[in-house]
Every structure is written in structure tokens, then in C-alpha cells.
Amino acid sequence: MDRLTRGLAAGAAGTTALNMVTYMDMVVRGRPPSSTPERSVERLAGVVGVDLGEGEQAENRKSGLGPLLGFGTGLGAGLLYGLLAGRRRVPRPVGAVVLMGLAMLGSSAPMAVLGLTDPRQWTASEWAADVVPHLAYGAVAVGVYDALR
Image (cartoon, rainbow, N blue to C red; front, top):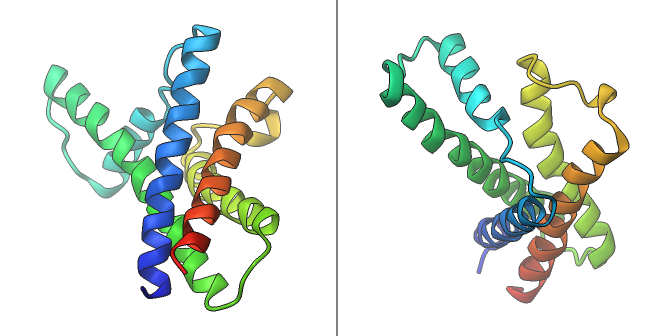
């Protein structure tokens, strides 16, 4: 299996882990889902001039496209890791942190550029809510990547 295919599979598995940890956090803390994915879709649609429709139709499209942005980020981070790691065996803790960083950068940087969030203003609790699922992403993704060698 080539490194890009391994990266895609690792990104998919990592994304599943991230989503599971995020949903468990919602259950444990009783918190609502984040609205930033949908707001990102709305802002991006405005930037590129795509009409999402009106009313409920637009809301439904944002609800569908928001998670797809997350899947794209997770798959993209896995692909990038496959390119970076190549044929070298990266120590798992290092790989997990690299993948966590790629996924966090891929999700937070565009939202910051769009003016939807400012990580410099996040509280410790907000950082933890972002780091923990992304660390799960990195740990699972690097494990799958290594297992597929």
C-alpha cells in the first residue's frame, strides 16, 4: 500500500476517533455542538459567491457541509502526513503530535482567517476541548498509518 493511501486511511480513522471523542464530550458535559463548522460554510460560501439557498434549505446545506469540512481536514492531514513521513518510521508519540498539529492547524487556521475564532483568546477549557479530540485523531491516525506499513 502506498503512503498516500495509508495517509488517507489513517486520516479517516483519526477523524472517526476525533468525532467520537467530541460527541462523548458533548454527552459528558451536556454541551451543544459547535456552530463554527456551519458558520465557516456560510462565510466561505459568501467569499466564493455560492448561494446556499434560503431559510431551511440553506440551514440544511450548512448542516451537511460543515461536517464535510471536518472530514476534508482529517483526510487532508492524513495525506500530508503520508507525504511527510514517507518511508521513514516516525516514533508514534512524535507522529501523534504532528498529526494533531496538522489537524488543528487545518481546522482552526481557516476559521481564524475567516474571523470566526481567535485561538489567542481561548480559555484553558476551550483549548482542552480542542486539543483532546485532536490528540485522539493523531494517536489513532498514526497507529493506523504504522499498522498499514
